[in-house]
Length: 463
Picture: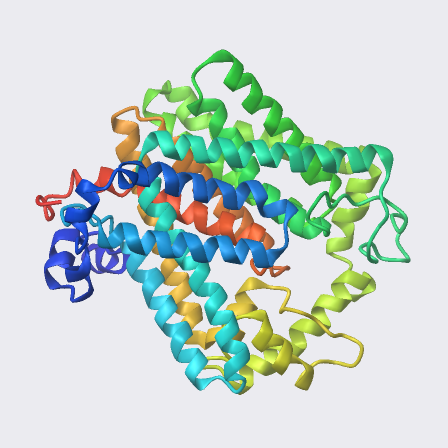
């Protein structure tokens, strides 16, 4: 049974064996001689890091078309770096293989799509995101560049969160009916900062909040630690002011996962009493704080209770009606779906929607994946999640043994992904590149630390 589990997790994956058997890998290093003689390529890693940072620095403030252009340029640059790379260190991980599998399934879904041109547009967007992942996973292998890119992400996140808090203080026009008109909070302010939607802002802040918590432990000097604490407080406050129920649930999931992984990191150094009681005390204290907040903070109580109001809440009712139409779409094309992307969804969904319940997406990433790539794509996505989290946990254990604080970035990546996955139960949060790039960045953080596992893998002594 253990051997089967290891096969599923790709625990015994050998990069050197993959290199020896791969047809595509023969092209890696084609321009290696040119790289050695090029002055510009001496700065290739720094240039790529700057391009990745630019995606995040501009993301919240510019049109999505410009972000797409930046991703395309970065993808081309990654291709150039790969052709000029050393053939010794491929950087290929089990995560790369599952990502490539999902990309292939999406390509097949385009071929079987009833709206092929629309699905091809979505496939192009997916490909840009995956190229961003490939470039990031390569560059983040450098601890210095990883830290600098995360610093850039946190600084722009601080600007976004600060503006959101300013909206809460000054008041801001609500751009849509985000609260149930019959609720006591019908006229309440929900901040959206530069993202234009409170739910999107909440999704954007979940990974950034996880990274800001990790920065408290990774950044060693006093002033950076104080800045990290300040960022964490600002991000948390802004996330609360979004009043996004999905975002709040995602926050609970992210915090729970980060606490569990932190316990894994420190467990061996704890006295026996704290080994046994630390987690119960922390989760019990968090539960007590929530109960007190629920009892004495009326906006929190009203929003939490609305989760269980069923169709009596207008937002719930809207989502339920959309989900019913989406389930019919899945029923009609369960194997390979309608093809990737919201363009394909927008072409097909009107044929299944209930009157007056038009939607741009399935309002659930899980239903969306089933719609786009069928159950084949959905199960490959679950496989991807299992492999990614399993690899991340093993990396944390390996990094802990050497007291390498990079482990906290991996914790933040897993926690941030968990928050987005919980939020994703009730919202489609990946169609905006501001969020999708953060998702694939988190995946890239985990993939980039794979070398710490390869060093201890007796099956791969040539890597």
